Image (cartoon, rainbow, N blue to C red; front, side, top):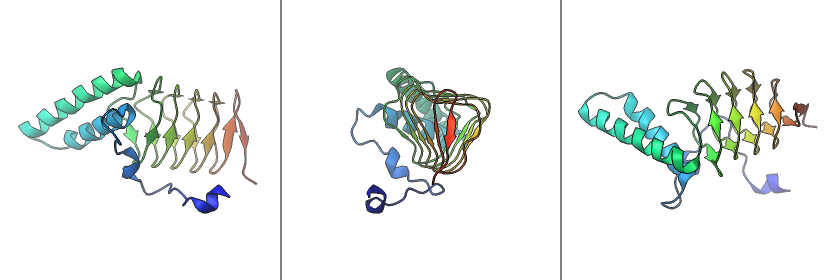
Amino acid sequence: MLSSVLPDTSAEIPDFGREKPTRYWDPSRRLLRSIRAYQKWKAKRGPFANLLKKWAVLRHRFWSVVTASDIPINTELGGGLLIFHPVGIVLHPSIKIGPNCLILQHVTITANVKIGGHVDIGAGAVLLRGVTIGNHARIGANAVVLTDVPEGATAVGNPARIILPK
């Protein structure tokens, strides 16, 4: 069984190594790196911090255009976020994403959505109406989630129906 070979991914402790670029042309990880840099330098004061904050904004704009995604620079993203194909991702700045999550292409997440740790969101999924997604949940491709998804459950379909673990 695959789960017995691979260690469980934590829903609480972020693995920032997952965000480290593996080569120079790694747009999704470079985009995340620019967001992290901005958030780091935003909290600091002084001319050097202001310069680095502006540099992070320019990098964010560049990588946003390259990836064709709309991830606001002030979005609360948990560490260890993976975005393999960032094309078409639209996130509202008020969302909260937990650590070690995975988001695939063409995902839309609207205002006030809370996503727990180690949540996998399939391609084309839409999360609406301020829903809460529990830890270790999975959202299927093209699912339209209108209700909360409990921990460990899977949401599939349009509108999404919840499949609880056995």
